[in-house]
Image (cartoon, rainbow, N blue to C red; front, top):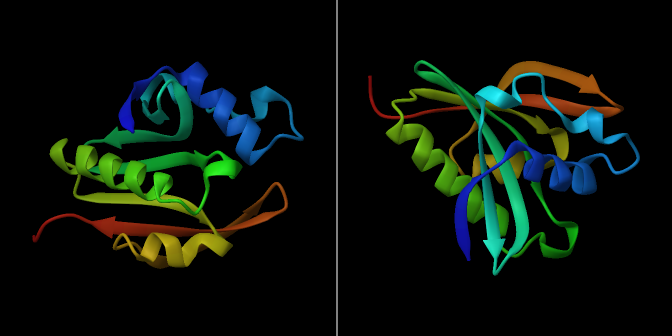
Length: 137
């Protein structure tokens, strides 16, 4: 297993396949993808999981975290998320947040994320904003 930075176009392909296969490819593109750092977890040369990190000073958001359906529940996503969180902390991030699908809250809680009061629905799916703080203030 190997984790490395990838191009946004690589992230788009896996995002599309896993998250919104019924939509056009443009649906999974973010207007700020050029400002993000995109990470991919590979097994050999096969891209298994992706996540995109957007750092803004001491705050960051990760978005479009996806693992191939055939490889879910095997620890690949956990490994990639742990790696990305380490990169965020090394970059000086104090608070990181994500828009978690409501069914994935317990997954993110294992990584120290807590639920905020912010919720929304997009594309027929319910989301909860979750956050985590690094270090002691």
